[in-house]
Image 1: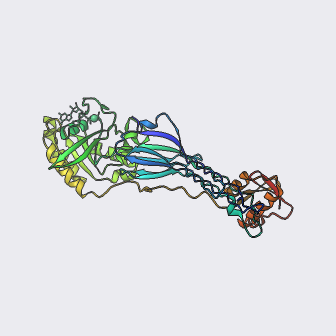
Image 2: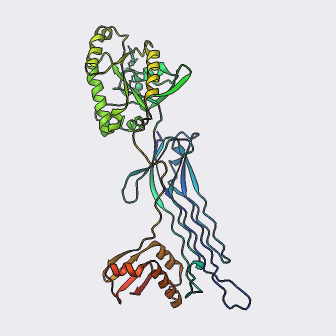
Image 3: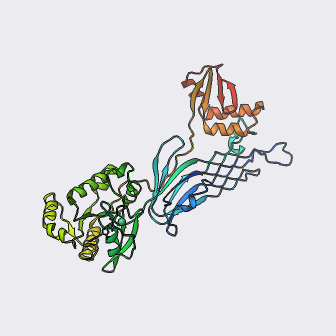
Length: 418
Ligand SMILES: Nc1nc2c(ncn2[C@@H]2O[C@H](COP(=O)(O)OP(=O)(O)OP(=O)(O)O)[C@@H](O)[C@H]2O)c(=O)[nH]1
Ligand SMILES: [Mg+2]
């Protein structure tokens, strides 16, 4: 079942800023006219109704957006990098399983057309026009484009059904689904017949809802026993449950309690979801004989079950009507509040100073990009860079960190004396 995919997404790198000067008659060197680099493209996920699984992400793992164009003379800006738009099924949850081990839900695409930016393109570098000042009219510095953001993602597709049928194996979930809808799940008299969630559409007085069998729920399912764990994930999307118990079981009430405990262990919200308890197999004579006792036992703990025979169809239509009514009352029961659209934070303007041996290290992405693009062997360029350091508060940050004149300082590839 392809309902999970791992991929790495990378925003496009920003284009480099240009170092260029206007050529004018009678002027030996015109003013700076280096254009900015274009921003890199974003990687965007979009929920698409025509896609039903994550199969497309089974092979290729790295997905890159376009790089921004470099700036040019004549104040020409580089072109913006092309966005990479990846289509995923509606109901896809996106997790950042980060390079540093974090694991956070960053988007939940539950409506067709909903989009999330999952990796931002780098900002284009500034051209040398930005670095002109009254004291420096011929700036020979420009900024390198910012690298695109990279993220490791885990996509999970959750089934979207209005109603989930839960219950121990063999209680008749598939039989009920087949009786209430056109779905044709496999039915057999042994446990774990159903190995994947099966969905059917139920019609009640010209309206429809989606019913799904959530198979494999047994004790320990929340911790991966049996088949249940994978499917519990799907259960989180349903708005309510039909909780089926086998009327011929030794203790239907206990069965129900166990399954509910299991739900709660997986996710406390699941256990709180509205349930309609269904006592099945009422056609069996022994079940008929003890039905009153079974129902009383449920009532004594405040549960009012519905009795059916999924096999003969008795009571199924009435159950579907009741389910439909309950569904209308149930508010949107999304279990986890998720951010609708995720936007990664801006790629730091901050200046952070640390110390390595006797050298102060200035960590400032904006400056490092400036240094990377410049000819630091040239003394004029170094002087111009220094002006930018002042502007961005590098000296202040160094002083704060305890640096005194004469100390060694490094930023990117450039070293100097404070
Ligand atoms: N007599 C009787 N047997 C039923 C009824 N409903 C289901 N069964 C039988 O119970 C057995 C299990 O039915 P399924 O519908 O496959 O049960 P399930 O809950 O889907 O089981 P798993 O998918 O294995 O978890 C089958 O032999 C069915 O024919 C019913 O109302 N009456
Ligand atoms: Mg089944």
